[in-house]
Length: 94
Image 1 (cartoon, rainbow, N blue to C red):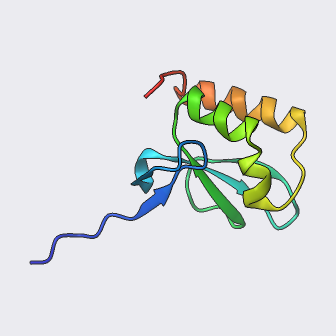
Image 2 (spheres, rainbow, N blue to C red; image 1 turned 45 degrees about the horizontal axis):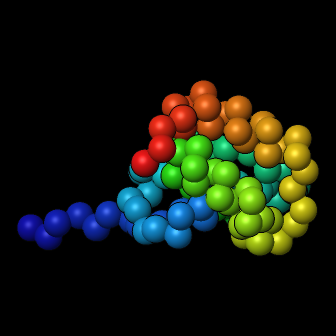
């Protein structure tokens, strides 16, 4: 029997390829709303990030989420993503 293929995604913070289940998906909906996708099933363009504060800060500082979504992201949205990331246990530095 063939081993099951594990889907890999690149973190926008550290640029490392990691298994999809280890990463958090950030999605821009067709309406332009940006939010965390905890289920991984929301429709829209997605970007993946490690569950670490360090990766989030790197992505924010270098505007990698804005590049991934091709749109401006306000500080309020970054603050909301930061809060949601903290709730998911993203305070560890890997």
